[in-house]
Image 1 (cartoon, one colour):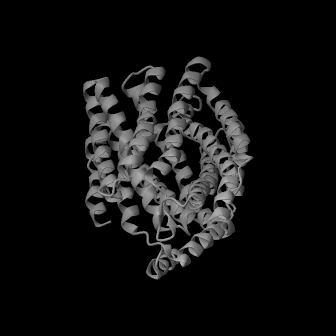
Image 2 (tube, one colour):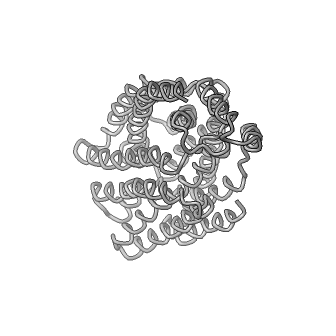
Image 3 (cartoon, helix red, strand yellow):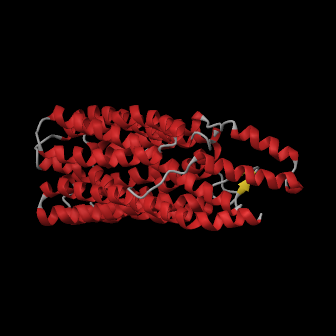
Length: 426
């Protein structure tokens, strides 16, 4: 035990540096990512003159790239343990890809660029989420806390740090990018994205992978304590059984699919709808859009603590997110119909809390039930979201040829409720 305590103290500082280097890098990557998501359609529309259906088609290809490669790179990352490599490569090539947006103007060209952006996101996102979970897992093993049947359970509070960091990056990204566009014009967006991604890359360089042998070594030390009688043989057997592989029910992905399908197409076009259809100034639209990730930060922190309550299950958290998603779209419909900015505010707050519930519930479910395949299942999670996004873009782009996006909103609001029904079987 004395040796274990000495090792714990020696590793704590390097582990903290590793964690916060990763967190800061993810913050800037999220800042650039949500700025891209929120305002690239506006850039394509105002700077390049593409129509809404054309923009929807181009953005769909980013989802195609993520859907194809997220699970693939997640699986490779799990097998090799090279989380840092995939994360840094994704950021490095993203800088190059963003710079290519200035090179040429054609719908096929932008479809290809968006596809490869999805490829790069699929490379780095599962790896970064799994690396964060491993850093926390190693710390829990060193501290001998949250160890359930030998497995270091990662609490919702610990996961909320990663979730809140991403959401904070999204919030600041939208506010910064909308302000820069308002001051310097829409063509400044791409340069802004390049600079922020370079900053993210710089902070990613000191990151170190958590070696599997480190975790296994800590587990063996804990098992040696068990052999002294602190934990009985039955628990050791249960640990081995769980470590063979976790079970992730497909119902999780099916239920989240319907939430994403109903919401995502409208979120992608929200900046255009608010500015052109609702007649809002760009700064006002930027603030409204930023309310979503801002309240995601609040939701991630609050939900991280709430879900650690044994009476609150992942299923309950997910179901709450689906209800709030439906409320979001109903508020959008009311806002466009009445011109009330209050309804848009309520909708954005609901949206922030909805994703906070869905992500917290889903993320905790995955990382604690599949400890050996985290990146793979996070890749499946991302792939599922992207398949829903692609399907949503195709269906709603077709419907928007005949009907207006605003006219379809009340009907789209019913789709997340399908996920609410399905998730009760989780």
